Length: 256
Ligand SMILES: Nc1ncnc2c1ncn2[C@@H]1O[C@H](COP(=O)(O)OP(=O)(O)OP(=O)(O)O)[C@@H](O)[C@H]1O
Image (cartoon, rainbow, N blue to C red; front, top):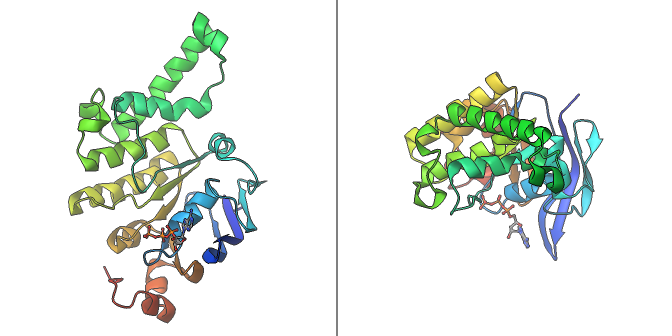
């Protein structure tokens, strides 16, 4: 069974059809990328899946459950985590604290138990720390653990943002342009991490990305969209060979 099933998804902002008639499924353990020119509707598809936007039409099913009408805070505990195109971290907190905040979806204690620091709270806290330390090791963030986000280079902040999503322990991670603004070397690191997320963590990855080198390297399948509508779906090579995709990218580099 597919982990994510999106059917006939649409959202219209006044007269703008930001997304219209988009359907696709993502299989467990798959790396699935959405590509398209600027303003094609890619981030809007992410905002619909992560429930920041309400669709005008269509359904979204995750892990066998209809999530179309759930709120954003209800879907994180189901196992969907995301990153944002414009990094959304707490600038005046440390890397460690930002990653621990990613664990909040797993809180099973209440504030009275927290105040009394009961054994259940201590156990939960230890579990959260352990998960966060695993993420720090996985993303090689040891040197930055106690540093404030505000003082970190852009590339490191992007990695911390991925870390915050991973700390949630999701089944599926949504990466919104993980390579934007990164150097070639840093983008290559992202490619390795995406491959490791799938292999070592068993994660399913849904990615929006302009960097076709990264898309080609890590994606099993690609969906190309333009003007909110689906153009083609298939392997990276199939999609790039599609005449409609070529036309939509006229003047834009598709071949990496
Ligand atoms: N909240 C909103 N209100 C009105 N229009 C919106 C809103 N969000 C997105 N749009 C419009 O929907 C269209 C798709 O935007 P979207 O940001 O999803 O494109 P994108 O493919 O992610 O582009 P980029 O690659 O530049 O990030 C654009 O025309 C945009 O102006």
